[in-house]
Image (spheres, rainbow, N blue to C red):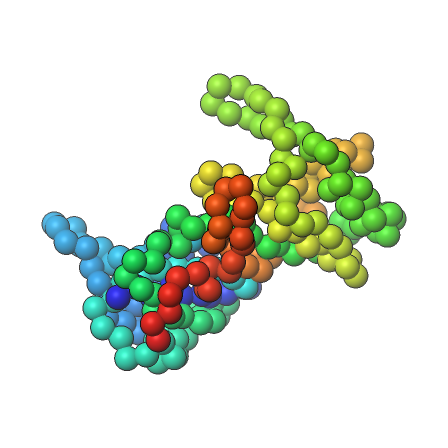
Length: 236
């Protein structure tokens, strides 16, 4: 049986990288006595995958992982079992069983929501003017950046990767492309905005929090972005 788990990540654990988070959850599954399924072969490992690895230093309210289990009582019991062994900063928000035909969360990732707030001392002199400019920036026909690749540098238009960009009460909100095929980091987005304004983005200027991860329930031409927790047929 496939189970999709949504969890949050806050506090000091934001400085723990993805591989260590994965190792942590492997141990947590054993401590919580989850009847997780193991792969076959000489070196069996828990069948577990994460939707979209979170960058070091970012917090999140919307992380997802898929596991396979041999048996389960119910999703509430699993959530409670896991939360009993979680460290401070990581909490299981929800989980639900999926149909066996449901695609892996990692393969579904298409977009993500982020909120950004300025760190102390990093705010622009004129916050109101800075935030107002975001609408004009996002409204351009093309937003070009220079990306470094193995073959050198190339110019890329990220306009199609920005689904939403707004600000309210000093908080910047963005919905941008995510996933292996097209991933726009919020840090790069803000650096590009600063460059557009003829300014340099201060180092470590923002607290960045991922709010949600979406899958595409439509196709490439007509995308329908749906939270990963709502994709797949629940069989609870």
